[in-house]
Amino acid sequence: MIEFHLDARSGLSPYQQLVQQVRHALRLGLLSEGDQLPKVKDVVASLAINPNTVLKAYRELEHDGLVAARPGVGTFVTATLNGGASFAAMGPLRQELRRWLGKARKAGLDEESIEALLMSTFRDSAREGIA
Image (cartoon, rainbow, N blue to C red; front, side, top):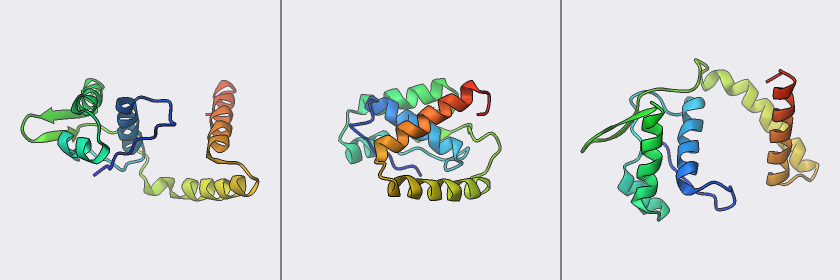
């Protein structure tokens, strides 16, 4: 089961962060069809946020066809976003990325600088038709 966290520095609203975390977990194969998302009351208790925030996130995911609510039971994953790539198949790429992150940290880049570099490189490669 996914465990949510909030980052006040992310620039995203809490509900958007929850949606993004579920989408990332689906992409990476950490959540599969049939898996249950945490109950609203549990998310509210662990993150100290308004229940409507969690409900809004779950409704958006449901609208996108990724989850389905079963009244009285919970919210369950109905689709994935991993395009058939398993988490295990991503292993070598994760290792290579971890090595690169180590080099970036040794070069003196902080988390925000690393993220900025990754995102700008990703956008540049997308424009060039690489990604």
